[in-house]
Image (cartoon, rainbow, N blue to C red):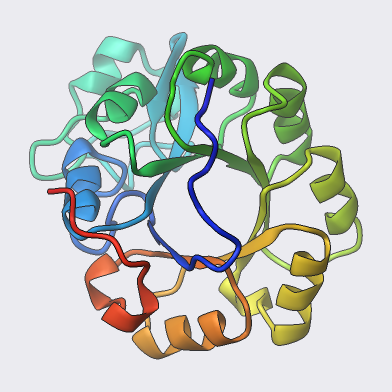
Length: 240
């Protein structure tokens, strides 16, 4: 079972978006290693199903992030693994990433593809490490929460809308992951009033990181962990 998240309500988390997507190929082992070397508190990744395997890739198609073409769901696992995901990296499995990222670094797993809740739950059930499960597909997130109610969840929201508080309550959300364009002081305060942290994506400007921290956000997802000002970080030494 996932470990209790080792963060206080005052901690401001730096989360490597798809690893460190601005510095290394996204959602690859090299990208996650780069983020860890930059002393992030967590890494974020996206999962889909490919021939029965839970693989780490963002788009429904492989065209943008690899040298191949086609739908992830229509490729065999062997065909997917033959693709170059950048700098010679392969598309990793979720298990490979969880094995590679140090156990003290939280992993935020976004349920990107349909039918990912149950396979991801099966993989993470025995993992003693900090985890956060998120999704724009709130029905899929509810399914995960029903399977593993003790693993922290976070609904994703690209815009502010009615019903967000209700879904946060349904999954007993630890956080709400909110798009930067939707993050205002009043909305961050509202999320906090629900008993959740407000984690904001994707923030790549150092000045905006400081603004969000000042308004009470609980952390940011960033493509460039190296740009985050030292004063915005938790007191933690690099692990690599």
